[in-house]
Each structure stands twice: as structure tokens, then as C-alpha cells.
Image (cartoon, rainbow, N blue to C red; front, side, top):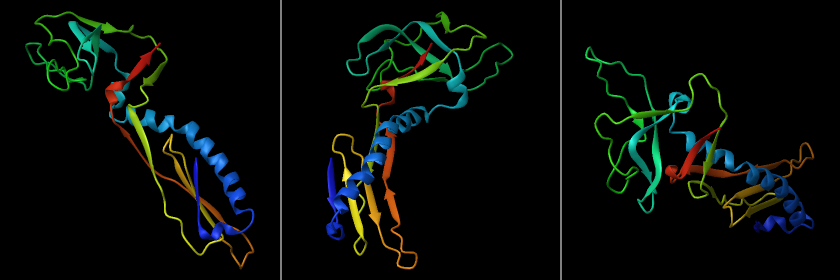
Length: 203
């Protein structure tokens, strides 16, 4: 942890006060940081995608996103929207993820063969619990070091190089009400860097 006090924090007890002020918010933020990550991972999925049954195509195996080698597990897909077939019974069904058998975004060993069997994952009418699992580098939460203002009773900033969290505390004095108003600020952003390194788990 790194604490950066301002010149106004030279008053006795200011450093101790800042440490006490940062203890609780840092604990809460560190514990809750997984929830924005989960939200980022699910941001690209609509209600239909999250609720749809998954399916696999015979002979279409998932690949390791780094080595591009087969995982020996059939790649699973979901239908992303409702479709209607034509008079002959033909329809183009949008799915996710896209079938990409080659290139830098390869996610399957081969494209599906004609008349390949489709296997639905799950049982119709069955309600199951679901969760999300992800690699620590799949998502990121980044914070900015906010500036420390002058002319106040106390201003300090605490940052953690391991988690990247940065919180600023500013305390002033109100001569009218004889009070010390205090504010805590954090400026952060979240992003899904490698969404393919996350997955949905169905019980």
C-alpha cells in the first residue's frame, strides 16, 4: 500500500486518521471487485443468450485459445435470437460464438460437416443453477490516481500496487457549522480483455 498525504495533512493525527479512513473502504472495494468483473463478462450477452440452452455439433471441438490445439471437448454454442424458417423449412440461425476454424481468432478445430448431428446440452423444463468462472486476466478493473487539492484540513490518497485500487480522501472544515465534512473518491473503469477466458457453469 502507498499513502500520499498532502501538505495540509501535517496536523498531528492526520496520518492516523487517513489510515483509519482507508481501512474500511479498501476492504469493501477489494472484496467487491469481482462483481464488476462478472458484470463486464456478461455485458455482451442478452437475456436470450443467458437463458438459452446450449448445443454442440458433432466433430466440432473447442481449441485452446493460446496453443490452438484441440481440447477434445465439443465446442458449445447458443442461439442468439428467434428465427423463422422459409416455406421449404430452411432457416439461418444466428449463434454465439461464431464458428472460426482458422486464423488468429480460431475457436474450433474444423467447421461443421453437412448433416452433422446436433446435441442439445441440458434437459427441457429443468431449472439449474448457473455461475461464472474466469481467469484472473480475463477482466480488468483500473483506477486513476486523483489529484490532491490544497487549502483543506487533510487530503490523502492510498493506492495498492497489487490490485491497482486507488482511493482519495479529502477533509475540510466548515466554520459555519463547526464540522469536518469528509469525502472519499474513486475513479475506475472495467473492461473484458479476454472474454474467451471466462465461461458459464451450469449445475
